[in-house]
Image (tube, rainbow, N blue to C red; front, side):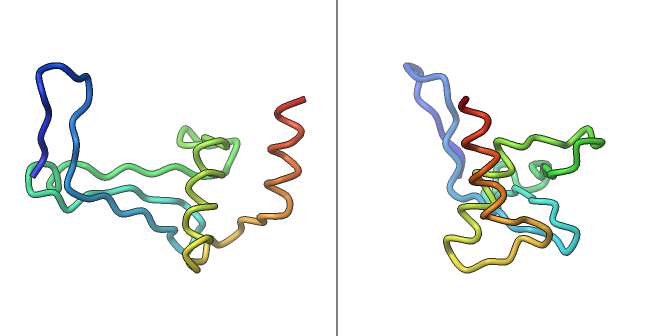
Length: 88
């Protein structure tokens, strides 16, 4: 069940799921009964897409691979080099 408090600016959901589809798109959903019927978003690593978000994609891909999940088309070695270049 989603909930919030009057003195904070966020809403907390009971759960969230992230997964990578076969095309490498990373999906984010929740099975929280208050939002599950309309909360489903996704991002990808394609610069030509409206859903392109390299920083968020990199973070979510790292979480997925950290737990042994496959992210098709994502190369962790290249992502680290890109991340370092972004800082310079």
